[in-house]
Image 1 (spheres, rainbow, N blue to C red):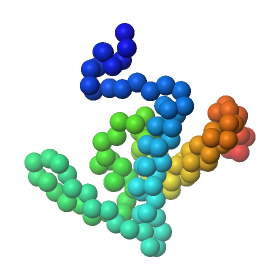
Image 2 (tube, one colour):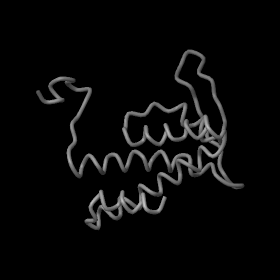
Image 3 (cartoon, rainbow, N blue to C red):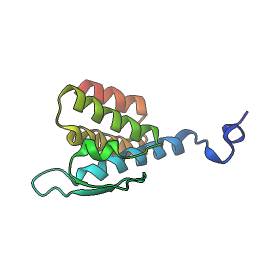
Image 4 (tube, helix red, strand yellow):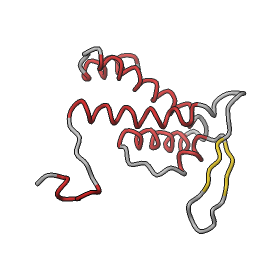
Length: 129
């Protein structure tokens, strides 16, 4: 049974290159969102809740920004998860870890477009670690 028939209008199915590109785009969007909060000239973000209270928060904390998002892209969720792990284990560097992972994905996308096999890219990243 096709996933579209199972979930009707609530889901789509993407395969191969298209699925990989959708993952890249979602994850890089998350990294780009928090990238602008880094450094001495980092910008604040205004977060408005959608709940009953409709509270407004102004922050440049990557962890706070990422916690406020509702994400359905699997690769973007991974970036949010690594931010949570960084916050739990170290207490700082949440934005930096997301930006670093986003840049690694950006470079992986370029290599994929240059027809380098994804397993070769992964092997290279593991060697560099």
